[in-house]
Image (cartoon, rainbow, N blue to C red; front, side, top):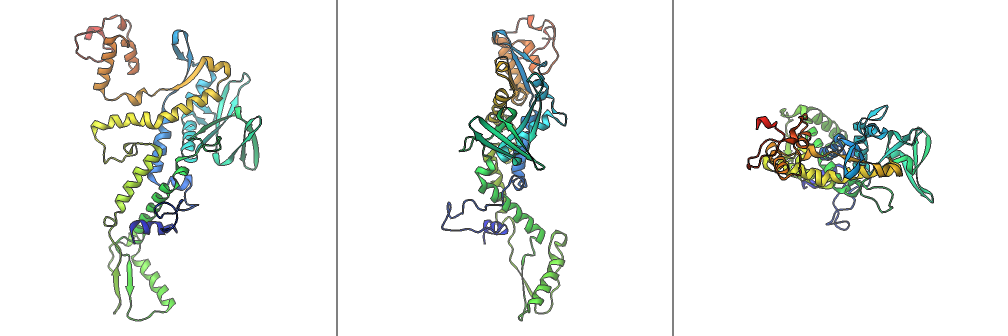
Length: 398
């Protein structure tokens, strides 16, 4: 029996030749993959956490549009505090945003109840468990029905912040990567269960006992229980077996390496990363990582993985958390400069080029590096000798 056959048999699955793709039934099982069981796969949990934690920890700033395309932080707006500091009295903005983003990745949808003040401005956001929310389309718009502890609450569209993964065919709910590619996650779960079963039962003592005569059913049961209690499990690994006269132990197990279990596990990590568009390096799969490509992989994580989720947040905020008049004046935006900074040499060259070409001020470069302001630093003429210097160094020290 192949390693895949053995892994699938542990969860009650079998390979078929007449249905599905390449002989495999689609999906492999109808009940084994849920958001909870999927997170038992380390690659799934790591991808979800990497995206959710990074998205939630990025500064989400509410800006006020100024004249000539300028902008400034709208720290006096009530929504600024909700997005940046405190979602509601019971959770911080980071905790609330992380929960919503994880819900989007695991369940396809993230819901938050909007609480407004007397002036119509958002004062609180309360995340809702997607499992307890039903969305219905009515002539007047979407209605969200939230059930908790037997109490049903109906919320109108403007009362709910709804974030979605890729939109489903109904045009209302999102589809999570886990639901879209259930078979990939299910196979990874089967591989996990195979490994647990193998090491629990002892990777080297899997085999059969051969007796010279026929055993009665009660004898077989007693001998099996006695053998398992003395030799099965990691705690009994390496114990010497003592056999009665005429009894022969015939090992049937192959090593995990020979069965390519480790290679199958590595492939599952890559497959899961594909589902979430997450570079394997981000989830600590280091086979192809090195210093020269780590910066580029981090950039890809922002542009290929996070970008879609960040835009979904920003557009959702504009659509549901700002009034019509507010959208003309205010907008929310994530600050991703910290993730795209690169190494110090590249940053110094980038700033030096911007300063010498005139599209970047020395004070702006210092601000991007979180350095304190220096009065009059922009009054000094930039050096044009071609020698790259650290951005924003005080003129007298150049």
